[in-house]
Image (cartoon, rainbow, N blue to C red):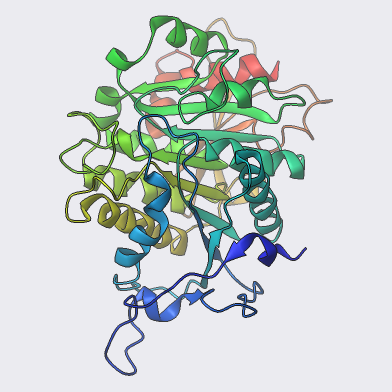
Length: 391
């Protein structure tokens, strides 16, 4: 498929390094679509950067559609690190006559890239583009897990038109549905209706309060490792660190914690797309928010360069298997620990007739803490929620 019809070239003036023969900055090694009829060749590419200048469905944050070029300004001044990852920048997706036209373009482009094992890095734009990202997997008929870094759940109301604050309900209600699990990381309770929290529990979705996550950031790694796609709303970062957002608040993740999360995302063998949303250059302070998101993308690339390729559903012989007997439960709880990375997974029982369909979802990323919980004769919460869906 020729996806170049959906893109417009970008002006990269000012991104390049000025020193001759200096190929150490991203601006020098990323192949950028900057001239009509010279669309980058996608062969052997690892990561594709996509800008989406779309904010017509932004809620209280008009202007975030200007973010892609603002983020690029800082991204291409960063040194590439010690890796040889092949990256292209496909430019900005043409703004459609209607918002649905833009959604279709994003979905088509992302599905094509994912099918080629290229990871799209989407720079929005408003967070309702997460819906378009999800629809790409629908096109591929792939059941997925979504992780959102967000201070709220973005459920909206059933009858409400899609927007950056209501896209999740549209994903949940979409038929046929290809969403296996949704996880929110960093929600702030005072922004969330208690009925919404109860709904998340009833759907067996995973939600983690900001304070709980920040008290042990390492526990974010298995959460993110379970994602096929990740959506990062910059309003999850505290206003002092990311002021370029109309919905920013005093509390949230610190900038370095946001970078840590995106590095975990890059490290995940399972994750195949990521999006950064709601940066508003019109109210940013000295480019601080755009600069932070550029660094978050850098950390994602660094994580990708250090992937271990040890997802256990492929080669279980490369893992140490642990069986834990829990009182009152007929079967043993099965854990796998990678010999290569020391990361942990749990195996959740699934009906044999459903095993092919959920091949990538009955092995749940976990931590040593979950293994300790099982050893204390208690079923880990992650295991239980997956079990409810699979059985």
